[in-house]
Length: 149
Image (tube, rainbow, N blue to C red; front, side, top):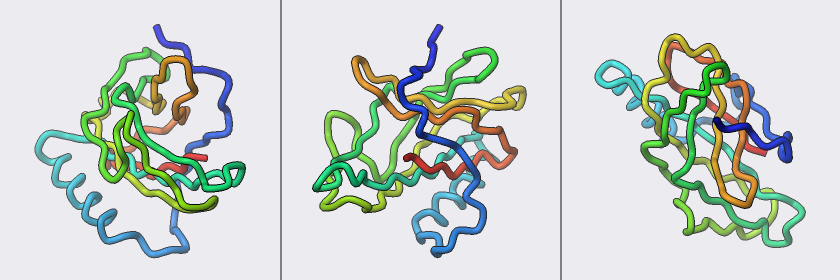
């Protein structure tokens, strides 16, 4: 049984609503593909936004580990990440040029079962803190927008 780390509580899930910026064309494409995939296989798309940290002079770096899962908040059942788009898989890294830069990427998972009411996005990294986004509320579209901080 996996117990989320309590070290990083700075990440929150919230619907982005109507963003001030226009959606990227590729985001609209992925949303369209997600709708089509839902009709066929059923997939879950997480559109992620990550802003490089001001504590790093060059903004640092970002990547995603293959050991990234959606975890049912109640039963601890897990769905493995199937694919990551526009973000490197560890050990490769995307290096930022400066603090405050935005990196948008999409994570693809199997369809979240209907009996799941809420779930967590957990990047399981040995000896380090991975991304943790807790208590994402399930929706019928299978498309989620999350802000990683």
